[in-house]
Image (cartoon, rainbow, N blue to C red; front, top):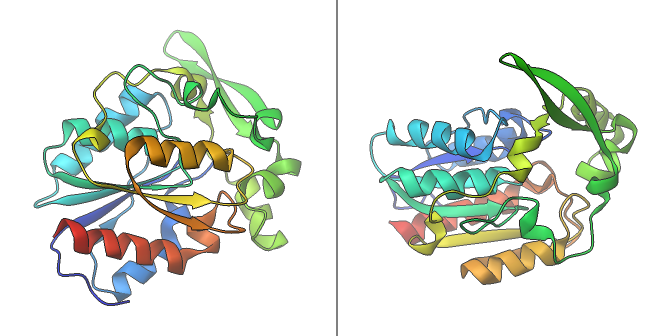
Length: 242
């Protein structure tokens, strides 16, 4: 990849059932291209709380930032970009696409459910004096749902190291005007996504006016299985925002 003529830092935000290491292959490729990148943890506790956290991370970075979000990380960067003044562009990777007043779940209501919907495993966690609900993917279904185009051994490791997301992360409506209404955006559609209906991704990209790239055969985990292509799209977006 050619190093872009941009001083922007790339902030990579993971989604549910994953952690920052899901960006490891993209980070290595960006580093090779001379691109500064950070992959902060996404708390996965609620859209407003997570969006405020990522906005705080972004606001403490000197200079412009290109926000990149995978899956539920897409709604999170949508929120964060409304609060962080140095956010200059958005890249959505196999992502949900939300508008103000719409939740992550609500954004997909018009489309047939993906395999993810029938594979969720609820568990409880302490939320102050109360008990909250969080979700994992059933380990035996993880490979098919999340990363069907990765090897068995790698999928097995991801299945036992997944990070759960609180139910409110999926059900809480976006409380701010989305950043994609004022910033340029790009959307990477995973053509063989079993976690989000690919038609929902295509519709979200069209609604947001994003520049679209579709990776045919790409699973939900395209940042791992198609790291070269995802990194190249990010580099191209950097060149556009200057």
